[in-house]
Image 1 (cartoon, rainbow, N blue to C red):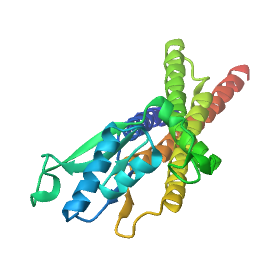
Image 2 (tube, rainbow, N blue to C red):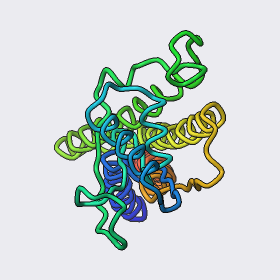
Image 3 (cartoon, rainbow, N blue to C red):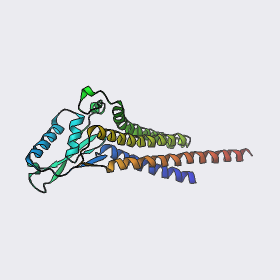
Image 4 (cartoon, rainbow, N blue to C red):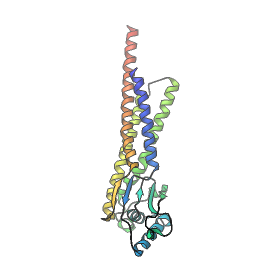
Length: 249
């Protein structure tokens, strides 16, 4: 029957969307910066100092943001990375091999308040940026949780040989897709506000990374799976009522 085919396609879409979302959460290429090649001993020393502070210093939004701007950085939901030479001579050698050095955002850092002037704790907390950051961290986890709950419900329904929970599973997938979409929106809004208060240098270009696109693709996939599941549930209910009416007649 058609509703069986719809269930199979919905399961495939759900698996693909969940894999995409999981990869997006675990990678750092949500947003990336491209800065010009640095020349001059003074500039090299400054960048080396920024890099050392980035890797070993205390967590500070202004410090890591400036380092990302200057060192071709990439940032994700859990990671921040910079592109630096593999050897200790930095930019003295032309064509030096570059490697990506990363630091993770710890759980306490994810809930650290954002300030109206990054790095200045006396400027007052920026509530909008603070809650956008927290939402972009929490919402994808909620999305994955909803999909896991939907999967467990579907597994139990298979064991019981029942299609009754299909509608509820579809609603869970719809909510998961909306949470993922909200994650992308919160991230983009937060980055835009950060660039406004941090004054992105004119020589630095920013662009969206492939991790963000994976999350963006997973959202409609979950919604498509939800639509198929809801349609399958309604189709099965209509067939059930028809069969019941036929038997009564």
